[in-house]
Image (cartoon, rainbow, N blue to C red; front, side, top):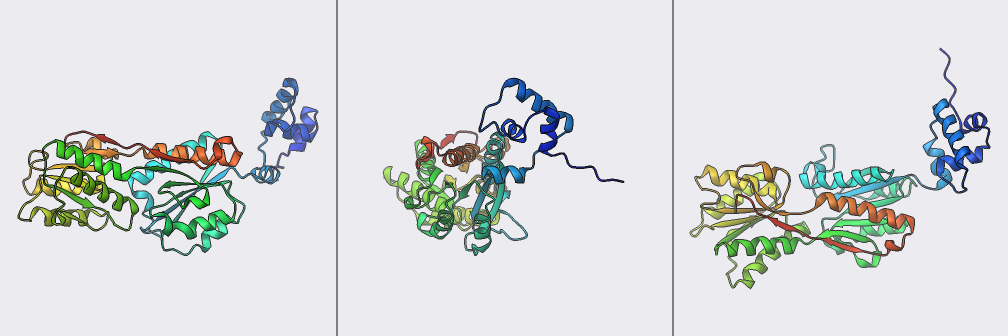
Amino acid sequence: MPTQKRVTHQDVAKLAGVSTAVVSYVINNGPRPTSLEVRERVLRAIAELDYHPSALARSLRSQRTNTIAFIASDYYDVGDNIQIFTAPSSSAILTGLVTETKANGYYLLVFPIGVEEELNQLQVLLRSGRLDGVVVRLVQESSATDPLLEMISSVDIPCVCIERPGDPRFGFSTVTFDDERGAYTATQYLIEQGHTRIAHIHGDLRYDASLRRLSGYRQALTDANLPIDEQIIAGKTWLSADAIAAAQRIMQGDAPPTAILAASDTLAFPIIQFLQSQGYRIPGDVSVIGFDDIPLARDMAPALTSIRIPFVEIGRKAVNLTLDAMAGSSNANTMSDVLPVELIRRGTA
């Protein structure tokens, strides 16, 4: 069976009775204008011939690939069993990134990388000419992310950092949220409800977010002239088993708390299940507040009181800032956008 000949822009030009340059002007909306009548002839020819412009050829002419990379830096497994994107917060950020890139005619290339992983593969990608811009998720304080950001800076690709800011010397815009304020607000609310024994179960303290949430909790107790009892502060990782072990140790103490602030919703859920299995009423005996406000927080019974982080909006804003930088917009100057967090009151506190 003979192979069908691929339709080219020369075929379109011949059918429309115009030059190949005019076909390019119509497809690319410039750089030179065409009359409405000529534009309609070219578009009719494209439809009749079922012509699909070569993305590679267009990228070579425009020096654009219409691709933005999402570099997700994380401590957790990025090998064959990639776990970075299983967290609801990560999937929400991805939703914002994908929605906004698609709406603007761009593609999203996802590149997970471990915090302590060699950067050789990433360097190949950054120097490949495949990317127009980069959004990078950081989980450490700025001094620890310098090697990664230096590599991105060296190839002169527009970049936006999310979750944690990079060192200001790189000049990258950031979209972050105030973990410390969120934990402070949650602890203050529990104090206003009459609690004086408030425990905190933190996540992995290698994460800057964990450290800041712990700091906000401590500061709220200090400002309320309440003692900070290290015996009711516990935690190890973001895993359910460690959350349960922490809750068990805290509740077996001589003076168990009447409220618990968990560093994430995914820690709060197993904590509540453990407490209920031990006969505690939620919130009658123990109030619990989570952090992130993932969708499941609304659906569980009782519904979880939580600190809401606008993860989808973080993804959207990051893409828009990247596009501004790529376009050389006046809005492309380094921006630090700290999105507000909000206490969502439900049934557990």
